[in-house]
Length: 414
Image 1 (cartoon, rainbow, N blue to C red):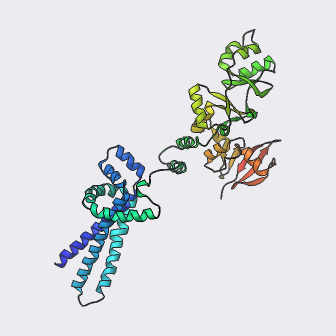
Image 2: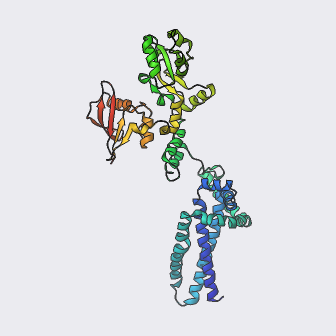
Image 3: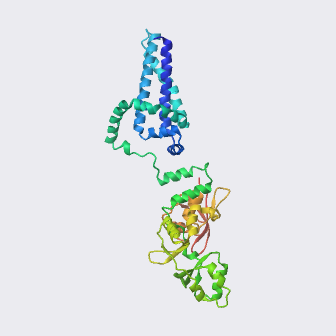
């Protein structure tokens, strides 16, 4: 065989080796979720690729079988060429092997694999058209090799048929959404993250606390009650006697405003208009309560603890805000970023909302508000001007009253 033909065969082997090496990397580097989307769009190459990836052991067996054959054949051709050119030099085989190794490393390994890793679809889809019939032709050999491979994998506790490469847990999905800044506005990112957090959130996490509940005390004078009705920004108010623990009903203001100017308007009129209060255990998951609100067509409920004492109030708007966040209320006013990278934060903000706004990771298992988290950490009411390291975040207490922290400053993180 003439040298020109031998060099031509060697060049062909190098090209085939580059193809097999690059296609292996491209097929294994494909984004599985983009691939599924393209399959739904009936992309022929994507369909064939997905079929091949259903059994990666067979695909890898085929590629490596072909690649090893091509590489060994190329080494043999290179040896023949070296002997023909320098028959009297005993070291020529070693030199030829070294040169071929460098050439194959650059041209048939690193370069195609790098390209395939950067643009996997460029080579994966065309390769799928070649591997599909090739797998059928070489299946007896590939099957024989995979028989021993799968046997060895089972010995170490791996079942190829039961392995799932495409499943994601919640934290991994949250990471994908967080990294998709270039694909969607930040507010939509927060909405999706809020939906993912619904499963772990309870009504206790999002309720209006007991001390902030606005209601009507029937023990007050009728003048004070009328004033509260006319100036209330809410559509419904709980009605109680002396204490919010003694709620007797919920008052819809649109109904009572029609009666409030009548001369015979009195407390009995209010009682006649009351709706039955809804009581919600504080450990109720947010998504469960949202379904209850929807099925029972209610918008407000009182959160109670295990002893039946009212701990807070939750509305349908609160549940929706857990998903859409600042699209309903501008919570960024409670956590304002300063020019030096620090944050001025209203300590009444919930820890969950603060984490969502700032992308921090303050613990949410204990106290629900930043004020509660600081007091639990310090085990006392701090004085203004005190600086502490709160779970890895340096903060300065700016403003306090007798029993709560009002305003804190989160110092820039180093």
